[in-house]
Image (cartoon, rainbow, N blue to C red):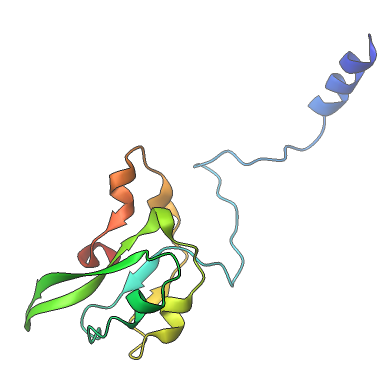
Length: 120
């Protein structure tokens, strides 16, 4: 009966396993795959990213640019596998995986659908 109390006292002196998030953030490895970024200027609206996506996370939507109406990728992050197939298949390399993780902190699932303008 006293053994659990002894273990508890021992655990108080040990280093914590978790970090105090968001004040302290865990360091990310160099090959970490985070939020997708889109360069609207170089996107050629080929839809290759939407075609290759295994989870159908990417849909093409029309947006108004300085060159007129263009179809750009819209990302449903809640379904994304971060497999990077969209990044590999993109001919102008305008769709890339960054290291931003702040986007996942939300209370509303609808905010996980990112329009092209939000992927900059």
